Length: 241
Image (cartoon, rainbow, N blue to C red; front, side, top):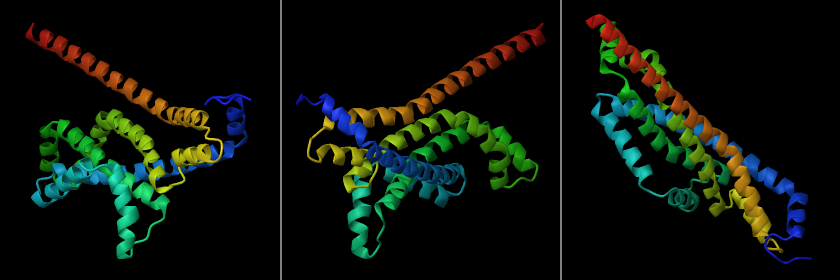
């Protein structure tokens, strides 16, 4: 029987205990989905706040974004896990996971939404307001539908980062894929090699399709913009003639 980090018996043991990794993967997916929904909700609201003309709303969005972007996710998780119980706020590790990760990535989604809104020509907002639309109606019916196409690639990249960041739950025994992998490997046989290889592959399977979609969609948008620019140039030449 080999004793190397990737010895055959270690792999046999891993595949016989596949349920450990399957359960961890399910927790990771559940946390990722809920955190992503929370991040999108916060991001859209804060993105709209950032582009509004109301200074208090802009200030709220700015403070939120700066705080979450400039403090480590692990510190935020440890704070909620260790500090909040001292003041009577008790949350299970699953709730801590999707809430903290969702709030953390909500700051990045907010910046993506803000950039997308600001990329829409101001004339469209002015035209909508001249037709009697309120600010919220303008955002809902005119600006945001156009913004979605622009921000879809960076939003997808944020989803990829969010999935990878679920691994930080391992520091509080979150029951996620990384935690279960590490716990399994350290339980007796120290089979870290196979455990981490399989864990990396599972994360790759989750993230690679999303990253590929984001890249191809962004290339499609660039190609469409180039085509549109050429069509405008041809029309201008025809008009001049």
